[in-house]
Image (cartoon, rainbow, N blue to C red; front, side, top):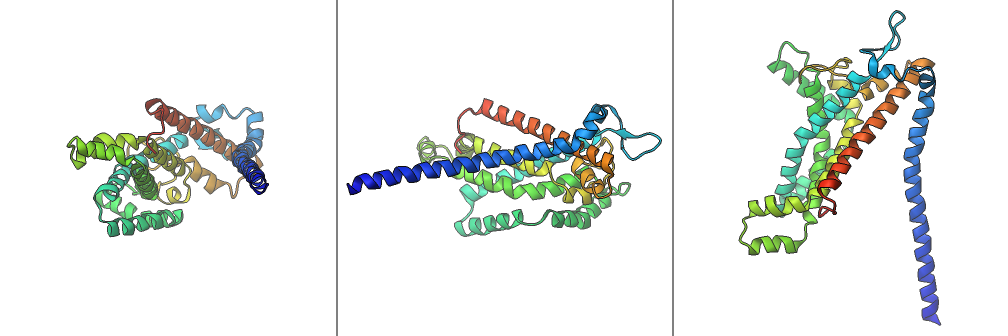
Length: 300
């Protein structure tokens, strides 16, 4: 009798736990839909007036101009993704090398200490990174390129790379640590050296987890605001090189929302909606490519 009661109680607890977890999962997804709906509602006046097409046909962003108002966001959209891709290109090799060092080479005390520093770096506010970039990176660029202001695509990429570096390093380390010991022992049994084992066994097995870390880093970098406001130059133009200033969409929203009128605010909501949709398409494409290359769990 007691055993039957315990079994019934256990099943009841399992059902309640399943229901609560399912509800929380639905709430998480619902919050994303609510955010998109809020952006769509705020952007609707601009969409209703037929200005959405101008976002991709107009050459400039000057919505407050009385003589020649234009609503082009292509240059800012390109700036957002160029600075994000540059940041990932800079941070990925360093972060992956850090994860490999932690997993296979570092002594235990050094690995623990350096990992704590990485975790601390994740918690540093974005405005601190931006201020540091303005005081250190921008003058350094001016020293090597005196004809520029230093506030540029390159400065934004470096600052964002430092922000996402610990995320890539820690997720890659977790992915490498999840590689089954049997695979590593099999590689050792075949006489493979440490470097060959890392390249031929560990990295392919951890590819899924590493790719997930890169996707998370992309999502954080493309939405960053305060850091890029301080170091990118805030000129809405298509950059011709790494030293040219840019203005991501997030900077435009942060700089103009405070004084925007109703019609201007609707355009900013529309710009935010465009950024969200393009980011979703971009991340979805990367996820599809990741699953196409590695349909399994990737060892993560």
